[in-house]
Image (spheres, helix red, strand yellow):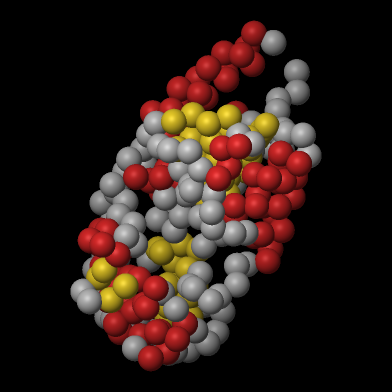
Length: 237
């Protein structure tokens, strides 16, 4: 029996049940700054220490968050389904912590630091991070968070891999994302246009709801329930 080809796109809602804070906490302000003022290459060039203080604050708040049943369910799907791929807009690292390995990180990873001059990267879970700003141990240049800032392009290889997976999918799962940020929001439409099924898990309808089967509720509850029912159907085939 051939198993369906399933791909998943996740957003901030998948980590809400883990207590991961979003940019919009406290009215979207950190100190007196809005996140749009700090998450840019220009802000980093102007004041790297300030930008790093902002990201260090975020890292400290995420450090004690743990994967929830939605993350764990997606990791289980990877173990069961040979062609499963997870595409995430999140930078919190919880998919990896849950055991997912086939993950496309569209917006990067807050726990990875990369050099602004050479190719050096390192995984770093230190929170708080010292010293700030950190320097590259190889060439001495400034390190930055390995995340995609406003005004920067996404990794073309990541986009290409995600695009191909959604075009080939029988079922696209859209988990905890508002489906309004492009190019990620375009991915489920690729599955729909090829005749595949789109299923979204969210606390409220989204622009995707017109073409999707929408399952409302916290995704840490709805996704595991759907997966359990889906497995039963597979066993009955």
